[in-house]
Length: 163
Image (cartoon, rainbow, N blue to C red; front, side):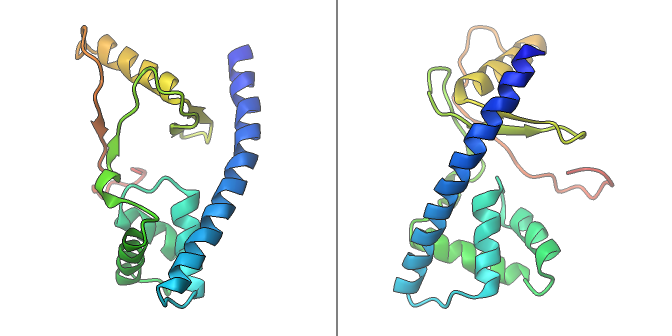
């Protein structure tokens, strides 16, 4: 239980730092969009908030989140915005599905796991690697190898309750 309390306490601290980083990133991206001649519309700001505030792994996922906030945002708007963000160097779709953290990486909040009861765990790169290694070992997939990378695709099935 003590370990869980440490995770909760750590989450509170990192959330506030994450907000400031996101805010600074947002302002810098808006400035770059203006330099490129883009108008800063309500839809673009909504998409930017979603992209910076969530770990979306595809344009489709961004679209679903955006359409819940603003029904007037279409899939084409999302794709165009993602393309513009990629052009200005704000994001890279190349690594959108690729997750690669070694057991020696010092990165904090490398992975966020949300359970169905909304319990949230923010894992460092090192802890994320330990969890994945333990799971792969327990299922007999891993012996002495090291994880090089993991590619994750968003669920495309239309089953109720599937995320």
